[in-house]
Image (cartoon, rainbow over all chains, first blue to last red; front, side, top):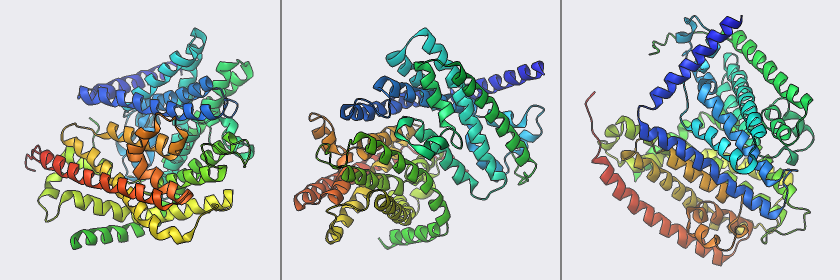
Length: 264
Length: 263
């Protein structure tokens, strides 16, 4: 079991390595994409500077905490898109019968699919997250927590993408639905949960798991609580299992479109 | 001109076949509006408070209008498709057709967004009325003035996007420049009116595309005056002339760089 997990991890890392090497073929575009993504994310600092001029806390968050929230938002999105970019394009693969090439591989179909591409600009997102940490909230303890929660957040985001993307096995136009749900998750993750109330707040910890991906990690960095840490880790494991379960259940319904393709 | 109208009409009819796709896109729109409504409700201590001269109702309506302009006019034709056509060389097929490629793309884009924009406008108005109960001071009499301002705002936004995509003739991927322009509009142009920024920054924003694309149209709906209308229309005309000249210049230079290797 452990050996199998180790081998699978090795395959994932090799896959990502070769994806990045492929993206680096044009170095100028590679570097431009990363740099501009950092710049792109930085523009939101203006938004928060303006809002904090109007009120000295937003949703119970101070400026530094909102920045950390943004850092988490960017780095979790980045990690998910570096390692598992195809999880976000799952509906296209299902609808257009592009899963065939992965079905004949000896390793896990799901991991094979979702690790088959990398987004270059996502590297900029991760770098931006760490820049934010260094500027606004740096300590060795925070660095360790930030890294841990960037990984758990990235996994939660990916699992959510697999769950929503797998709806295409059953539903027509699930691609648009999936795309919208992903947008919702990413959009709300960059605003403090304190501005939301009642049932919406509950939804952010259940149907849209932004709470476990971003909000709880920020709270844990401000004040550590073991129960919250276990909650984040437990939720990450649970949503991964659920994503795998739904994907493989859906895969049984998958019908190839006889699309001729090869993975080189 | 007739051929471009025909392209517009054909695309519009094609888009009408996929209304459900637009309706499903409302999810993101509603969520963004919901976030901003919550955010401004939190920022305003009470409904009588004024921030930079805006009441809470005016501020939220401002955001609803700018977000409608943003979501209602989004397509990938002016960004991904043009860049892809240039990168792949497919533009060579468009260049030898009996139409101007740029006008063709603009006509197609407007065909795609016309219905989409009206649907988002209705959805935005419904959200506004439900959350805020109407916009005080809004007068239907001004509607004939809003139409050219909104149309020019959308047209200028489209031309700027096209201009950025045309840079793909020189740089392989114009995507990052689109990100920056988008963020400029989203962060500075949709969430805050110009008056909320520090005084030293306001003149810069007033000469930026934000003034003609989002602020101008939204401000006129929130607080109409003939003087503002004149200012916005003058700025939009200047932008339009400048952009048409820039597009013609860069397109003519760019097409000379196209290499076609058969196929």
